[in-house]
Length: 177
Image (cartoon, rainbow, N blue to C red):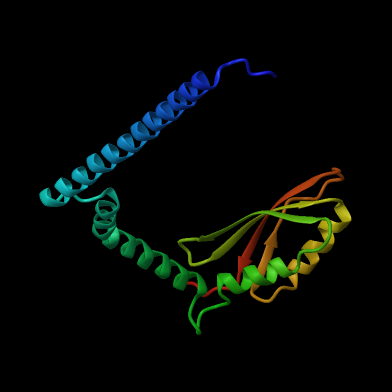
């Protein structure tokens, strides 16, 4: 493109351009400087007045709730000790659960596992088991009868349904109270 401006006008245009650019840069620098000063004074006065950041307030709250957490942790450890049993007691819940879970074979799916201690001193496991076929279910029940620590397996009569969902009760060998 051909520039038809005389040399004097070209110099004026460049001078104006540099002046406007200097003004914009100056305004940006002034804005940054004022923002910094405002933030520094805010932090300075908050430290003078003793205001604490939210993170330290949360830490103090956690210290207050620590006793509650320790109590819950103690209850959990007591329950785990109860489940694992003692040396003189019958097989522990954990060991029987491990044995039952190791028996799992193809076509068997353990959906739920619940432990219950009756008032008579009898320990019960309640299993919710799904089997793909009747044959797989009956083989699994035979294997469950052979597990050490299980006294009896109570199950409903198996039908010829395609998708079997069998509620089982495993009665553990346990001392009567």
